[in-house]
Structure formats: structure tokens, C-alpha cells
Image (cartoon, rainbow, N blue to C red):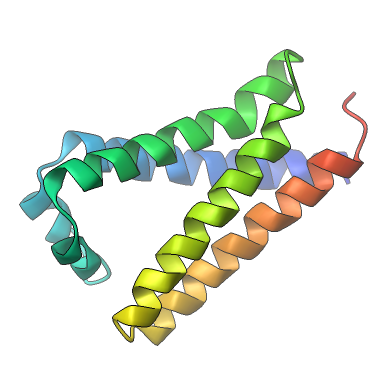
Length: 126
């Protein structure tokens, strides 16, 4: 179970670090043009997108760094809880926009973060 948690944690953190970095480094227009799933950015200002990118990047760091260093490892499941809540917000945005297929993907991410929170809260850190 410990290995499974680490694998999922690293994959999720890498995905969110890449996504957050992309949002921070690209302009709003360029970010919107990178794929068909990014039309939600029309509902947010450039400042909001930078905050969203920062949340994703800090969340990704919070998933890995505490448990990897052994310094305050309880912060890893807390970060997973925060990212699950973040994905609940993303799911709400997809719901409002009637983007059902993309919303299903957001729900999968929400489930992944809920699983990571449960796993890191219940499994003793070794």
C-alpha cells in the first residue's frame, strides 16, 4: 500500500506541478489555446488564473515534500484534502458550463486526492 501511495502521489504531484507552472508562465490567451479543455479560463481574469496556478503548484509541493523529508508529514494528507476541495471547485465550474465529460475527469482527480488523503492519514509514515 505504501508503494501505491507513493506512485500515485508522485504522478499527481507531477501533473499538478506541470499544470500550475504552465498557468503561471503562460499568458491567459496562450493557455486557453493549448487545448480544447481550457475554455473555462474565459470565466476568470488573468489574476485569478495566476492564483489557480499558484494553488496547483503549492499543492503539488505539499503532496510530496512533507512526507519525503519527514518534516511535518501530516501536511501531505492535508495538501491532498486541499486539492480535493480545489477539484470540487473545478467540478462546479465544469457543471455550470455543462462540460460533462471534462467534469467526469475532474471527479476522478477529486477521488484520487481523497484516496491520497485517506491513505496518508491512515498509513504510518516510514
